[in-house]
Length: 155
Image 1 (cartoon, rainbow, N blue to C red):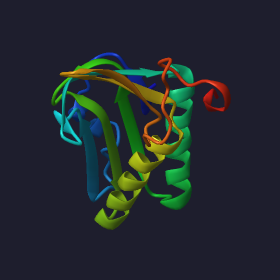
Image 2 (image 1 turned 45 degrees about the vertical axis):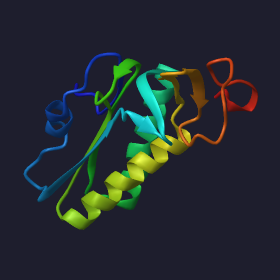
Image 3 (image 1 turned 30 degrees about the vertical axis):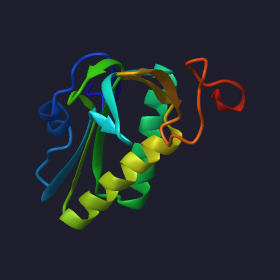
């Protein structure tokens, strides 16, 4: 059985994620590819370390897929997010959405990445030229100074 919502420590193949949503009813497939950027607010990133509560993260990705099916019933969604050490330009996440028409595919894809940032327990450590920092949640609104969520942020 094909897994639509995956957390992996291996490089992501965009083609494999897209293949999961291709079907004869779809006239549009949109993809979002999140990559590691070199500069953040003027600071040079050397590499990132992503971590996650894998089983919970995959459940939350599946929840996002269910939310998309509720809003866009004809959509098919596949999401793969990478964890571990990622170098500059490595792919961190791929979202593929297919729908009969492009407008729904674009909207559903954007919805998916915004929801990932809101609810999926994945966090990262930035390795800069001049130090390191656990960034915290994906919205970057909470710091995780010990390297993982604590207290109310633990799901």
